[in-house]
Image (cartoon, rainbow, N blue to C red; front, side, top):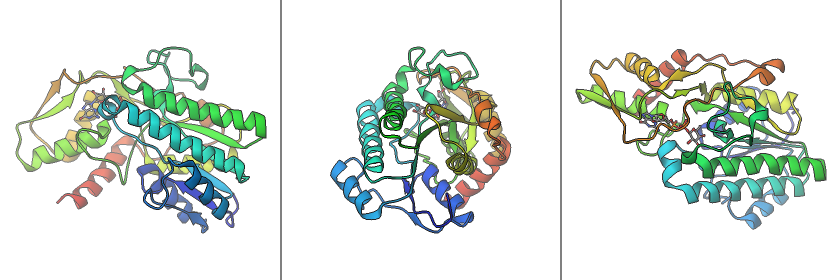
Length: 309
Ligand code: GFB
C-alpha cells in the first residue's frame, strides 16, 4: 500500500479495527476512511453499495464483526451467524463491485475442527466437526474465507483471509457475561482486590489451553500481510505459544496483585480443549510477534485501571 492509498477500515471502533487504525496512522498512512455503525449499517447491502460507490477505497480491512467469548457465542447463536454473514457478504461484494485493489478478511482460530491436531495448520480447515459453542460464528467466518476465494477465482479479486488467535488489548470488551476470557479475568481479579473478595471464580475446569496475541501485534501483522501476501486460502496469525486457563489466571492474579483464592465453576463450558496456531506460514513470510503475554497483561491492566479507578 502506498501512503497515498485510500484505506477503509470496517469496524474501526472495535479492538482490532482501532489497533489497525493506530498502526496505519503511526506508519504515515493518511487517507483512512472510517464509518461508525450508526453512520453505516453494514448489514444493509444497499447502504454498503452506496458507501463504496461514493468513497471507492483502494484497500479494505474487514475487521467489523459481531464478536464475543464462549458464553456470548453459545447464547446469541442466531445473532452471531446472521450479523457476521451479512456484514462480510456486503463488504466483500461491494469491494468487488467497485474495484477495490485488495481486501483483508479477518476470521478467527475457532474455524478449525474442535479436535484437530495441534498446532493448527491452515490445511486442517473443514477436516472435522467444529466446537459446538461457537459453531454459528465459525460457519460465518468459514463462509467469509470461501467467499474471498470464490471472488478470487471468478473475478480475479485480491481478497485475502487471515486467522488471528485469541486477542486482547486496548478497547477490549470487559463485560463479564459476553467478553473473552482474558479481559474477563482482568476485571474479576481487579474487582476482587478492590472489594477484598475472598475468591475469584474462573469458568470451566481451567485445563483448556489458549494462545493470546496483543491487538497491536495483530495490527502490525495485518499491515505486513496486506503489503506482502496475496493468496487464496488462509494464513494464521499468532504467537505459536499457549497457556492453560488456570495458568493464565495465576498470571493475571500476580499482575493485579490479588491475594485471595481461585474457585472453578464447572457449570460453565470449557469449549475447545486447545487451539494453538501453527504460525510457520507467517514466520516464513518474515513476521513474528513482539509483545509477550506478561508484558501485554501489564499494559492492559494499566489501561483498565486508568478507566476503572
Ligand atoms: O475467550 P473465551 O471466552 O472463548 O475463552 P474461546 C473461554 C475459555 O476460558 C473457556 C474459560 O475454557 C472458559 O471456560 N474461562 C474461564 C472463561 N473463566 C472465564 C471467564 O470469566 N470468561 C470467559 N469468557 N471464559 C472463542 C470463540 O472461544 O474464541 C469465539 O467462542 C472466538 O468465537 C474467540 O473465536 C477468539 O477461546 O473458548
